[in-house]
Amino acid sequence: MRHDRPEYAGARWFTSSYSAGDAQCVEVAFLPGHQLVRDSKLGDASPVLAVTPTVWSAFTTATKAGRFDI
Image (cartoon, rainbow, N blue to C red):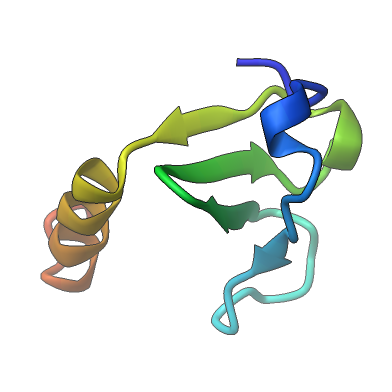
């Protein structure tokens, strides 16, 4: 999905409070019906992944449970 889509124009991007500050993280924005994710290194030039709130909830729950730990 492209970052310049009109429905994403009002997105307020933020990084996790757990970010190490070394620009190796993602940014997230929440819009009605969409959770958006992009690469923090690319900022506005980054492609955007848009998922539903249900998918975002499942992902964050699994992450908190350690399912993606290496």
